[in-house]
Length: 601
Image (cartoon, rainbow, N blue to C red; front, side):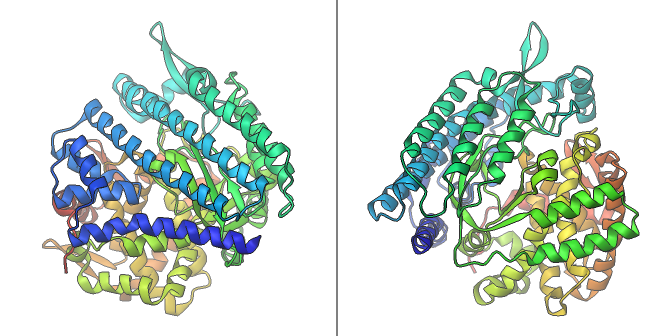
């Protein structure tokens, strides 16, 4: 069976490669009908820039480049959102067809038992329903409700105050304000009220529940003779069905916590996801309709090397900072109980057609994690494959220099083992970094001004980096510094992409450290790099991270920390440091002009 799983893993990899080939065709100047036909539908000219933007939307599942070319063509507001939704439907049709064809091929080759074949076909049918749900969910929250709240109450802090004062946020099983919601706001007689997903999206949820019932019936007559996970899958799906039909908003957090508990018991090589994350909705943190299957790579051993490094760093630091004993015990227990899965997304639906994770640590429910720990999923194979496939962009060569860009490309092509090592430090380290300094009330307490996520992503990445600094390998320091630079600079492109604002803010904080340490300097529209300033950068991270850890220990408003590095100017976060702000503005202006141009050299 393991050999068959490896063959399925290779099949997913092959399908991803076929999709990524569109980038090469774009670079070659080949006509690609699937891209050009959709450009005609949304009314964009068949230019290379527009083709790149739409190819990126399909292959990388990111819409920032597409949104920028649409805005330059005069689209804005609801008109822009309608075009984005048309493209979402186009992307979803492509992947739904690809997923179905792959399942048919797996069945034809008899690579899975009847139990798992029925399970995956059922997952796909649920995914189709989840995709329809996401369309309605996104439009209701992101296009209608949140803009209305912003218009009515102004600042994010005022919106949050209104929501708290009027009991419009979900509460957890202890009756405390929760860090997320499984409900939406509707206006009745001019007054907002909170209603569950089951009530607000009755038709879509009914379809999902019916699909779950069918999958339970289809697997009931078969046994899981390979991995003995039938009981865990069955309990998980039944609990999930119960959560979707819950209409009482005072109980939604509790029933979804039970979903997380049942899900933590599923430990097979085929991992089914569920609605877990809440990046899009900055106010109520409504959990997005995600759905997927993550496939473990049998060829990779799940050694928790980063966990050992992270725990060692945390044990030293929490003693120095005099963290409360209960918090320290919670964090260490979560690190030790974390399940690490190295693999790639095999099937994905709903919100994930707007972007896949490079890695993920879940569940977010800290009450569940205090009992059972967490799961970390790391998709290094997918990230490396897609990074190699993407063309070099002119803006990267112009700003960072061809030598820098070529050295980064050489790392991926010629030294993949080193690339994976850096991924372990930065990305897997990032996911473990989320676990640190957090307990069940941290997010709800620190999100007073709706800025928790905008600090948390930096906290996570910095945690991985600091764990490296505590036991650094000298031969990696320059490559790691290059990686930090490339990430921080690249994140500027997300300045006006609301769904990924936390990562953009993370990039601004990294840039502050890179400039303050002397690694970067900007003058006369030229960015200078000094990799010899690594020790200064290391000291900046150690100092800044300790300061941030204290912020978390004291559970202060996240905005207070973010304000040290950013200011809010005309609807965008900008660096507080003048030199950093000059560079960010320069890069953003350049990105708007040439950000979608490929470096033909």
